[in-house]
Image (tube, rainbow over all chains, first blue to last red):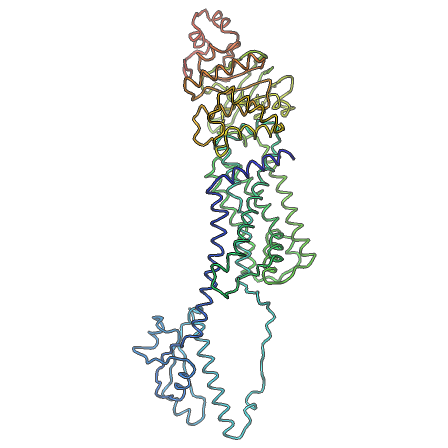
Length: 391
Length: 248
């Protein structure tokens, strides 16, 4: 136990004296995340607001055939533009998001009180850019239609309600935080940081130690190799945890700094949620520490270790992407599969849902069991003779 | 005391099986300096590695103060100070911190570590660099740190693999002086070298190794007598059969 602590303390001291490693893990990553998320959310919110407040630019073909409609649109903050060149070309060139055509038959149909055709032209393959404009003009036209319809019924002495046999209202049960994309991002970032957050320390303390030729004297001391391996694994985990906690605190207190006033963080940053998330990723951190340490210890040099360990980046991506793109109904057994369980737990927590006791027990239990198992394998691997020889 | 009996170790390489050490036996006594002389590639480092329990011998055994290196490697490591061929030190730590880490690994308390470190720093003349970080140390300063680190638990037996490798003349002289001091303290000192002059000047007992075998052993006088050559260097060359890989 004493050995483990001695090695643990030495490796952490060594790592914290490595200025570059500290800069990356305790300044760059923690700063980058609130900057990226803060800027993105405020820019996104600003764009959306501007679109709603701005007059909608609408090129109209045949505006003179429906002067009443055009006047109504203008009154509803639509900037009606004459069309120069073809409408299709203007939409394709992305000059406008959407265009309106009033066909030649419109005045005739209108006078005879038959449904008069109006045609919208847009490019459906660009939903993020033109989607809000399309929805807005569709809404306006529908409102115009129902307003005029009601007036016609009233003019004929019929109650307008007759034309609306059903009234549909929506009740969305999603919690206010349940943005599916947000949960995906948070799960991905957290699993990634947990799994490989300490990888530089793992590589430096194993492959680096071998490369700098200090492994052989270390193994000539009377300490056990399991003790050395455990100390290094724990140091890797502690480093990752410190980096994640720093990132979390930077996010909690730094988000408002980078986001514009009033924009809401993509996740709730209450201590309760952050604490639960921390608990969830603990097995992942330990698992990542064992994996990176063992893998890097097999490498001859720091560089070789880097190429091994970077393969590990794909491991936490599997459950996150599977959860995002495969349509599977959540079942309790999923909480028995490490990493998948943590992805599920993070997603649920970020959505503002609670986890049941069996879900907690299964997720944490199987995660920690796998940690113990891989730790035992790591200790065995550390006993091999080839490990000691520097070449 | 270090007793080595009929050690064998083979390595599998792409070219086939290499017998690195093939039946090496010798004894290094307390209060003596024993030299392992041989050209590069003779099997010195492999023999040393089996001695300080980093490798397990295929046959034969190593006894250090009566402890078997295969059966009880921990006991052997406790009574052995080792300067391996690989002697890297932690460059973000000062010499003192490097020494202290090994003291802690040997289970020593802080007061003992401090006292021993002070003794080693003065014995090895390290005072002018011991407190700064070892990044930028000269080769000699690194070797001194590595030796001090190996001696922090005050071992009765000291094993050094080519201790003067890459050192300048002054540091080499200081190193030889330190080895003689260890002998005077009654320790068992075993070192390997491919430098004939060094072995001739320092050793009470010389073990000559070539191609994994012990080809001769004895005191300098005995080796001269055996070959009938008055010059020890000529005697070494005659025993080994070639001067390839040796250094005067």
